[in-house]
Amino acid sequence: MTTPKTTDCESDESVGESPTHVRTSLAAAMTMGKTPGRFYRNAKLYCINLLLTYDEGCHAKCAYCGLSDSRETETEWTENSFIRVDWPVFSVEEVKEAITSGACPHVERVCISMITLGKAREDCVTVVADIKEVIPRISILITPTIVNRDWLVRVKEAGADKVGIAVDAATPELFEKLRGSGVSGPHKWSKYWETIEESVEIFGHFNVGLHLIVGVGETEKEILSTIQKAHDMGANTHLFSFFPEEGSEMENVPQPPLGAYRRVQMGRYIINYNRGCFDDMAFNEHGQLTSFGLSDEAYEDLLTKGDAFMTSGCSGETMENACNRPFGNCTPHQAAMGHWRNYPIQPNAEDAELFREQIQDYSFTYDEDETDFE
Image 1 (tube, one colour):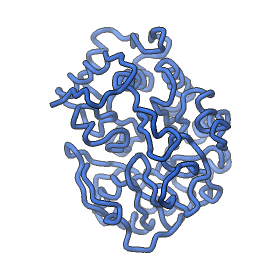
Image 2 (tube, helix red, strand yellow):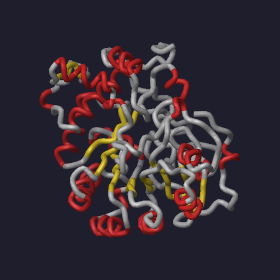
Image 3 (tube, one colour):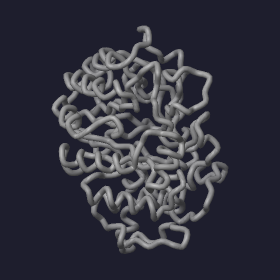
Image 4 (cartoon, helix red, strand yellow):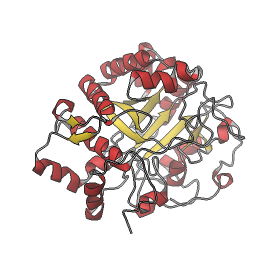
């Protein structure tokens, strides 16, 4: 993905706050025709990602997040990058106009993300109802810390049909360390899982997506156990690969090994698509996955098709993973090397050969210079 500087993709209107204004991912701004750019291998974004925006920013202090209140940057919160790219501000009306004008006819869904700020609770409901006027499928990425069951009912009535909950850390200990008392943050593991349960009851089985990040201190065994727990509750997992954000507390933590990420991707796919379960899998003394519990034929079939290594996100009208987030987990340079973490496109035969090699790599570190792809 190639893009100009931030100043080229800002709205012509003065920067405002939600609920009248939202930040959009750079990929969404490109998709709506708000800023020029092109995607590697002609990938397309099928979901417009929106983020509620406020001058005071997010009150959470998550150690890895680019939006964290503890992040040390020289810019205002509204100018901070998130997942390493700019999130320019546009009015909600501009977003609606882009959807209705035919500027992005392939878009099948909109996702509205909250931050940890009290006023985001009501503003999320308002923005959902507003966007519902122009597109039928709306996901919400919610903050359990500031919502309750009654609010979940209200936001569904406003038009949301799917819920995302970013637990991120796969164990209660890591959650507490990275999002709770370890960083003087407000989030509680128990509250997040309570909200997952309530969301499944209100929105229906597998209309809830649990976000988990690989590479923040967990083992492959721990994260796959959590994926199975979520699946048994009726929630799928949307998987992310850790990428350090400059100025965050984890800015010097490296990306997870590519082999580890590939194995967790495959394990998630097996669990979420009922091809097997965690209890059938085997792990070594380091918690690394050594057997998926599949027949050789089933294993080769998954590697060849490559669906397991595509972005896991909410579905659209025709797309299994409409929220395909190009370059949410890696750089274009890494993608060109064959290190694309989440494929926003259908992998080809050459990609499948890379998967076959990468999934057998049991390195404990990631070396970007180890090029797999010419």
